[in-house]
Length: 568
Figure (cartoon, one colour):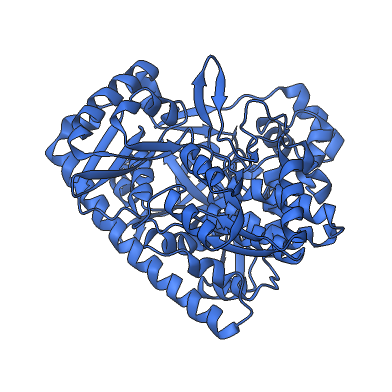
């Protein structure tokens, strides 16, 4: 792994240190996160509702609000068309609640991943028209649903698209949009909305904000943030700007949720009455919500977060727990199959883009599998589930490689495709998979350099163990929530000496006790048991470590510990 020591302007560090009254190390961390002025740093450290932009700055939002209010006034039936991931399901929950609050008659439809596939479908629109709906509002989907929107128009249904996925490229720097009544998407080239990083639930939230604002109910806005924070963190969008406001205030609200479904969900995840972090959402809450969509459902999540029936919330939360356990088992089976493929064809590991396919792989889990492959092998990966001559695929990428643009260069191979710069979904005939592997590797090889495929770790600062104390840990807490765009700080220290013989915890985790300048600290390397022997060889020599600073509580005693990221 390549270590990159980040550089920061000493003068700017000095300015923030004196202006904020913080430590030099804290000032450095702020500078490295792009907060170079005192005003920027103060806004970052003290996020509030005032940090949310005027929703009406978003292109098309005034038309959308006007049409929704008209539908409410005329008692027209409104259908929210969602998506089956956390982002899409939370978007359905908040928009449905907001429209109900202003007196609207609203229902929702979420596709079943394993039956309907991704995106909007004409048969759903036709059924909605037959059932008397007059307005369709998409959330987290629809930016490329040209034919579906045209079908809705032909059936005299108005359509409002809210989405955050990249629009279709039309050529000459232009983008093509569906001919809907309104298209809310900050990634539109003609949209001057200041924050382009909103997730699908975030875009729906701006519509909610506008509706509440127009109806004199802005006092209710903060109550929506808990659910929006879950959608935002789960979708791994940068936790800066409005997303930071949403995540920070929403996580604080999760400490005392009024929503019975949220209470039940936190209880089943073991987070009741605890401080909720972004990591808790990403690794404990979101997987349980996602598991419902991945295993074939979705409505259970909306009902969990909408019902006032306490017994039902407990039942649904327990069901989600069971689905998540099943998802974990299936995921492990697919990953083992992938490792077997790579072992049988070792030359594939040297390709610039890994294209892996398997008969009978569960379509709901391939996205997670792709993420794990990227994490392990440091290169873009597509994982394809094959069935009856059709491949359903999901792809993830590394930072330097725009995966959606790459797919656009081989678009003739696909039955459909779409997504983001670093996460895509697609379908294609299985006989085209070898050609996809060959052509996509040519695209990747022309766009990437060999060094792009070397995993790297960015070091915020080189420190001495004596620099690390409870005061610094508390200061760093002000940077939370950590996530994309605001990573958990990583430090490095050299000349560390082993105090005790290194050992293993549960046969797979590395446990060390290190010393420097008379200061001793525990260090824990999750899943780094394979490094035990190499560390033992360094027993009498200095050790260099990249790590994160953490707290550990054992038998009512709390102390700082190092979480090992790498050893050099």
